[in-house]
Image (cartoon, rainbow, N blue to C red; front, side):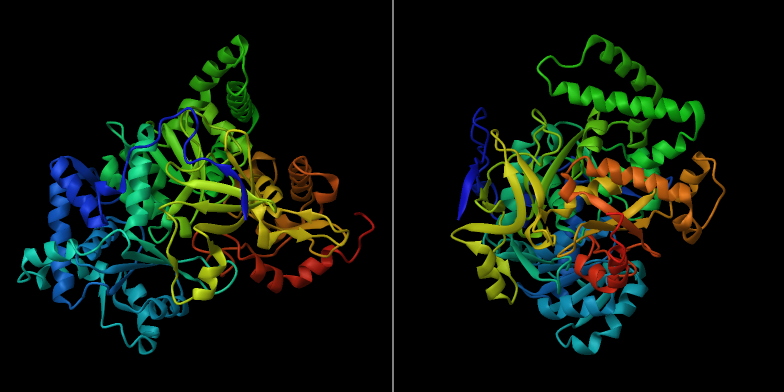
Length: 611
């Protein structure tokens, strides 16, 4: 059973006062926002790259939600029916979410990159009755498996007027019917079924209730008010709304008052950040790594590159000094101001110029990047959560950030670590169970606690540090237990590296499979005075091998010699979502990589004389 415990709140802060009685469902959450400030801006819509953002008031959004919900009723959707949404992150997703809930339906997200077989599994297991997809290509994917989905009665395409068709269909449905249905759901009723990303097998349907979202967003609004509930708070969503992290933020903006924006195409991300100017941003660590590496490459070579690297070191040193009793020295403060004018201000401008906070989740960020961003003036609130916990279950607090940790238990929740180092979670945000899988549910829900399968430690302030995942622990032939995440995260921070999979289970030493970052390679080669070359040539080039060896040496500084990477092998292809080795949330499907690249792993251990 769980042992050491992180309290729901820190000892020096008052208990949070946000009770669940403030709202009983997601439609109720929106209705209360409407009653509070109907003319305030809820969302800003973009007409496309380079266009202005158009404000949508709470009143206008609720009216549109009602119109679409009436269409769902007209199409035969009954309370409790499942509506699948397959789309990129855009305004229409949020509209369909709240319209479905207003009609009494349960929403089933589907990643827009999902294959036809994944669509078949999710829609069949969830029992989807209606699918709303973004593009004709998505509709074609559904059509491939339509014969296996007898319960699916309708498919609407957003880009072919699907929303307008719903509004037109519902013209004769009384608004009172939507009002009646909106009042049906209670805290314990099902709101959505989100399918896990499937890193260890077939995705499981996580059943999240209205109460899960209501509790977490109300507690978050109060506990993280400085981030999301101060006047002028605004955020731009670019993570997939099929992921629970983005979905939580979508709902959080209702009670917090933060203005929400959407951008569906990350190729336009920097331009959209510049025009929208968010005050807080959420992303996975890979995004923060890419921003840093791209900025370093943009600096080029010679004096500009030396200035960038000096400014980065100053930012990291300044942030580290903030954690000491004496704080930054006078000399460091002077350097920090100069670095701010020369470099840091440009980096903040790349994030829109107004970002004060960045929320990072999905994987460990790494202390170097955490200190770098705080040092340039963007406080990264690294957090930890799972689909089963409706997203965050711990997060660093604005007034006490411990870089390298994922913070204390999220406001109103509890975290424990048992004798084996496994993390357990309790609170009103924990899911009710896996759809159609009672055995798996019983295995993880024990005496009111959720067994996460992740490993960690708690410090004296209740701050959680993630050390690995129990199913991914590597046991070498010498009996040494190794958590691969620490090594993978540090090595992946190098500009040349795209993905890393540490190996060594029942082997004499630890090795790693590495892929090169095709986007970053040309800039890296140019900055190092090397000619342009393709990936195959780069893999065999001595300068690339030397750079990776140095990166491995730096990564090994975080672990003991027995845990260190002795040899690496560069794979001929990257691990991507398109070729099936990454989940839509950018997690590596480790088991699949180990199976398909078994020969490359064996080659690491063919000649062990250098180990």
